[in-house]
Structure formats: structure tokens, C-alpha cells
Amino acid sequence: MKTLVVGVGGMTNGGKSTLSRSLHELMPNSCIIAQDSYFKNDSVVPVDSHGFKQYDLLDALHMDTMMSDVLSWQRDPESFMRQRGLNSEHETPSADEEVYVLIVEGFLIFNHRPLNELFYKKYFLEIPYDACKRRRSSRMYMPPDPPGYFDGHVWPMYLKNRQEMESMVSGIVFLDGLKPKEELLSAVCEDVCQEIERLREKH
Image (cartoon, rainbow, N blue to C red; front, side, top):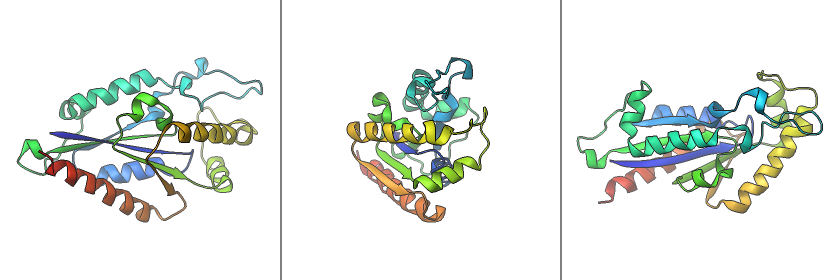
């Protein structure tokens, strides 16, 4: 049995969740761990000097819990999926050739050093400011974005986090989130499948 951890990061509303779900549907023996599932309770998320909640920080997330789940999957993917009601799909009769794929998806996954060390493949979806603001404004969040939140907090924090990410991580494949979903999926799927075949051929 072999394991492959794939990181799908990106800015808010860049298309990372859509790409991750589509990739998961195509990949046998795969599952997703989404960073958005690990946000701390709203009451403990700090507020900046403008009164904006600081959701775009690693401190707003239970990263220890997320890392624990990722490592739990890495130790025993079959057991991990079984406990969560997910069925693995065996492609080959040989257990030695089985490759289990974990898709880790989130907006700050590449800003957490311990997580970075586990990725075989890293993808980052990006879209221009105008498209990002338009998509963000069309979605409902709980709690809702207060007036001025995108320009006052979301976009400045994205630029800050991106700069930090690029200073500490190499090997990221940047993807244009404005391209058709099918085109993005095809490119990433082909890349991941090549890595799976390389792992299968290793003895």
C-alpha cells in the first residue's frame, strides 16, 4: 500500500473546493480533508483594529486537529475512510500496488509548515481581484461578511498570506481559476495519475 497527499490551495472563491470534489470523484481510493472544517468557534476568533474578524489567519483554525486527521489517514487510509463511512475502491488485486490519495483542500494549507512537508503535489488556484470580489459578494457566509470586509480584510490578508506562502514553499503549480473547470480538472488529474503510476512502479 502506498499513499499520495495532494494539496489544492487557493484564494477565496478561486475554485479549489470544486476542483477537489471533482478530482475525488475521479480518483479511486481517495478522500478529502477540507481546511474550512477546522475553523474555531466564532467567539474566539480575534478582531482587528477595524472591527473585522481575523478569519484569514492560521490562528483562526484548529490546525493541530487537522494535522492529526491527516496523519491518521497517512497511517491507515482504509481504516480512516471506513470510520467516516467512505468506501475504498480497489483497482488491483495486489495490496502492494494500491495507491491511496488524500486531497487536502484549503486557503492556507501551504502556510502551515508541517502540512507542507507531506505534499507530493501542490496546486494553487488564483483569479484576479475583480473576479474574486464578485464571486465573494455572490456567496452567503455565516456569519455574513460585514460592509467593507473584502477590501478591508480579505484581499489584504490574501496578498500577505500569498507572499508568506511563496517565501516558504517551492514546487507549487499555479492554476488560472478563470479557465473552464473541465480543463483544470483534466490537467490536474493527468498530473496526479502520472504520480500514482510512478508510485505503483516503485518496489
